[in-house]
Image (cartoon, rainbow, N blue to C red):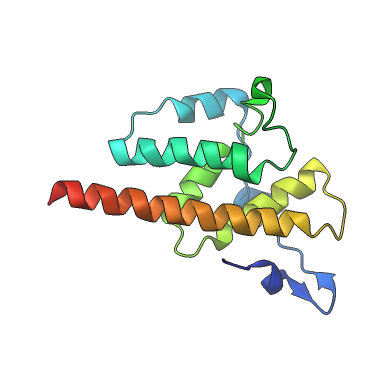
Length: 141
């Protein structure tokens, strides 16, 4: 499992990884819906759906996945996570973004669950991306 949290803790103090708001995009409901409805290749669509499911069921920073009425709660974050996932080599950017979101959602300082959730989420996202890309390349052969 990846562990980026150690990178951001020095001598018991957390480094500021959220200084650039441009680095972390949160979509409006309208922007998120437009992103959701874009035409994508089959493999990109599979990855988009998997990303949505993983954010809701694995990351679930607000612990709301038991209530299906809250299904769109993480929609403002989905497009940026998806875009980061398509371009990352190790998931660090996704980790930083998920930590940033949790801080905005009010995660208390020193909460060690947020980094664990982010690490687990990144790990699973990268595995799904690899599996989808591998499956797609096999079909092309």
